Length: 335
Image (cartoon, rainbow, N blue to C red; front, side, top):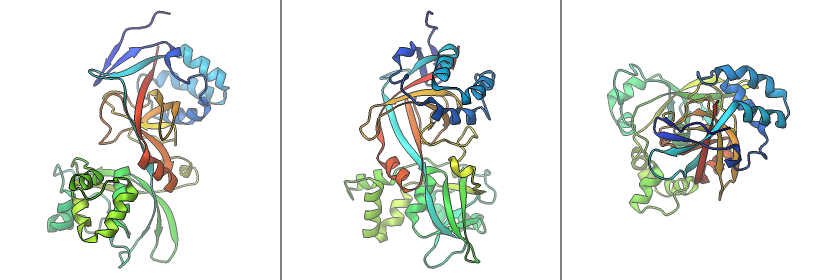
């Protein structure tokens, strides 16, 4: 069949290609991605709603049957920026698993907040430094504390990722595991504290481990470092059932993320719910696989840009901290 015309989608150009142009397409374990696709079909975009009944039927099909259906129903397009190279950037994110207390104490003095009083009336809201220092900002947050943490850098990690699993010690001594989900932000731009430390000449290793080591050696400058990132995030507490625990938090599409099969994208280049073929050669992680565009992030901008959801807990966090490598993307669009 002749290839269709190219499509301009927001900040990107989609260039039609043959299926043979997708590296590794015949080798992917497609059934692993089907769970993520079923999640997207809970809230499908207009382009994919008509295909979702077939996606559901194919959830018990063989990989060969799934692959044959994709070849018939979808057309791959290489995603390119309107100007410049089609090679982009892949990073990763995760869901932290952290400890907190329901009560403030000498050992747990870092608050995690719900939405402040009058949220939305002032944009942008107070910066991180203003939240720590201005009486009017503190007054708007009084009584909005969800839990208290020991380490301000763990709280920052939770805010950067946008959600996390929390083991919260209750006042009666019991411990509950819940999810803190993104509820809103103060609408300030994100600034990397690692980048700030590099600019200061304070360290050469801007990994999360290097940042934590610097903070332990320089406790008097921790606030200065934290305030270099004016953005902060507010949370809402959600119960974490056994079923929910098998998936990640809800992304911007409104569906639960699937480790290894969900990505965050620039929604102006790739609509939510779009199946995407992702190829990244390494060096940290070699990837050639089907993923679903189900989330976004303040730092995820541009046509060929993706943040790869790797799961939860310390190992996922270690991988997310290291992953930064080249990327190619192909959207798989209904014919």
